[in-house]
Length: 189
Image 1 (cartoon, helix red, strand yellow):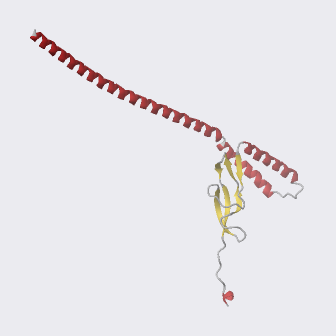
Image 2 (cartoon, one colour):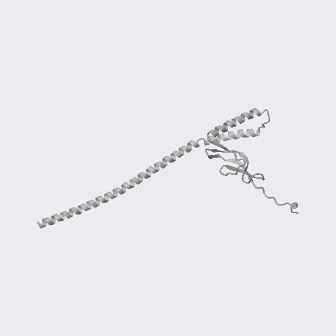
């Protein structure tokens, strides 16, 4: 009987030991599965964030494409506006023979400028304004006593903005301070 009791105690201890090992294995497996779940959740959040970023970038690209779709076409039309302006500059407004043609050119130019403005194409005519290298292209510098240095004296060609973005810079002549002439011999005496 004592042997039976020892055998039962031994069996109980072995069962408890086996149960402890199984519990440890289960705890380790649960820990491993929890780590895998956390990693999968983190990866899922990252994928969702990346997808949201891709959507936002695609929307911005589409918006820019709509906004600047006319860029090349508008750039080609600027040569027409320039030619009409030059024609008006070169024609004599007092000549009665040219007056009807001049009025037609003025109306055509106005129609073209209004059409371009409806499509958010804005002319830059910087006459008298300070030189802005982001919107102006300096073609020459000229000494001037009546204009502030760094301001636009003449505009060779107007610039244009399309939806706030530079389509073509204005070609300008920029003023500079007059060079100080050394005093002549007569002034020293």
